[in-house]
Length: 284
Image 1 (cartoon, rainbow, N blue to C red):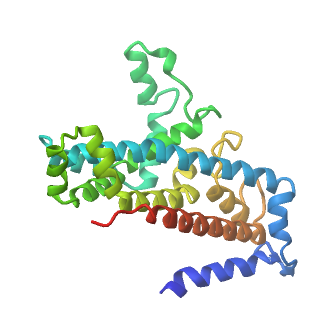
Image 2: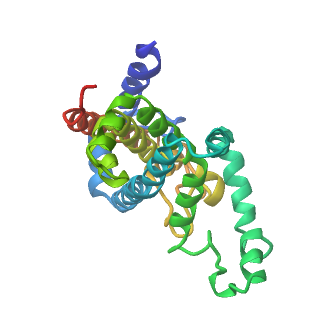
Image 3: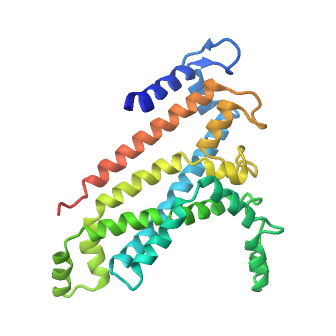
């Protein structure tokens, strides 16, 4: 199964990356020139580094906001507050929604003319905060990231909740008997013991951030508009390999090279972060 779904596609992508091919005409073997084009030739170089910059922004924003908030809510739910079972279900509901449906609906909500977001802001006297959320190059990426965080927040919340609940109760009781408050309890006892959960979330966040595609495609289109301000490696790969209004005919060779680079970046960074975090894990 691994060979069919991982090794074979990777090998085929690398094979295609060695050719100049649009999917129709005869293949011309050019060796590693497609990889050289990505890193040194206009416009591929500019588009590639612009896209990877946005992927890094996605990762940092997701770690800082989605996963930090998820950790906070996971901790609150683990304290067995009133209604925690209901809150768990509420947090997880958006995760079950289709990415395409979420992107389409939020694109409607954020419409600058008749979208519910701007209408609500105007009705409560905050007209100055109404913007063309998806039409402003400065706001488009943060807006789509915020929508993505809204959808995925329940996932890290439940992962951290499960990790905290896995800690033996006697550890918590012993900390309270030693006079620990909630702050010291969390940072000295709980957090070191949930490093495995942090490892899982960090690796999955990195993989997701490098492969983000659907949300941008639905909300901004294949060219990562406006003016490539939301472009990522996923959208760059797709429109390069299969063609678009911007790139014209498919360039399967360069597109495959981008796909190989995405895989190498994903594997290397994920493996490195997993190894570094595993060294900090504490055995129960």
